[in-house]
Length: 477
Picture 1 (cartoon, rainbow, N blue to C red):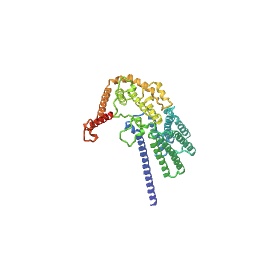
Picture 2: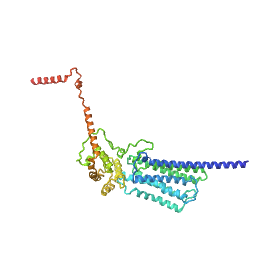
Picture 3: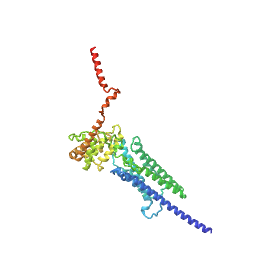
């Protein structure tokens, strides 16, 4: 009886252990899938819900790389620490694919390299007040080279054991490599800590440094527990689960939204209302940016005046912009409008001027930009190679060229278009409304003579005659 009872008990324990293992693996899988779905939603939410235009250049592909690297990093942790049981019968299931390449150069290393590249850009733009000397698509592979070299050496030496763990001899340099990238990010962050950013870039960088350092500490702690207490299974599961949770928090808080896109930082997942801040000028708080005052006095527009002078009028600029957009040539007028907004920012406010100047360069000046303007190569290079992004004449030469192009290609057709006719009609109606408001300011009622509070309605006339007689008597004396 005792033997059968022990047999049944062992069989029951094995069944419970199998059920627990299955439920745990199911929970980890669901947790990983839900986490990655949330990461995708946070990254794509502004584009699908608020219809934000997709940026080009590093502002687009750096966030994409961060999402891919986040997926690689979390998947590598799940696979490398044996959360999911699988047979390593193929080369792509080996520890060196998951724990070395996917977790290192294609995971944590790629995430930190993207953040360092962004911090490097912030340092040059806001501290040096110039564009970085090396583009992000060249800078990123350069700072990723140590990870690639380290992964190649580990793959060649093969120091991993059957649990995908490093020995003590290899753990120290691996932790030092992780810590080195955190230290480099911390160095760039300290260099820009005095800048008064308007989109919480500095806060995001410090959060990333804290999260990365915590992740390294948890990883070292989990490694020590797994190596020293190899026989305690629940301790191994708890330490690995803590490592996964820490990595997940790091990814969601630090890497899901890129600081390369400051306008997207104004969008929240909880807000379903239409986006109110549509332009960089409105976000930066430039006075009357993008607004048309209803009581603004109408101004007569003379087609013989210079076009650059006419474009200073907000209503005319909006009408001319609508006409240019209908001709699929509106980028020049949009450029004029944003440079005009830049001119409203005081010279002694360099941070806001840099934000606006960098926004204009990314949107209109860079090759392949969303609304690239047609200017000469010499002028384009002068802007890109400037040593002072806050200079008041940074875009002056480009404005001169574009004004001449608008005058030759758009102005003549505009004067005979329906847009100008509509503009004149609206100006006439505003002028009539303004005159009517002035007329309402006067009261022609005959009861105004009673304001002196006397019973005699001709008191003013008596007062006038009395004053005249008194003056005449004084003169005779």
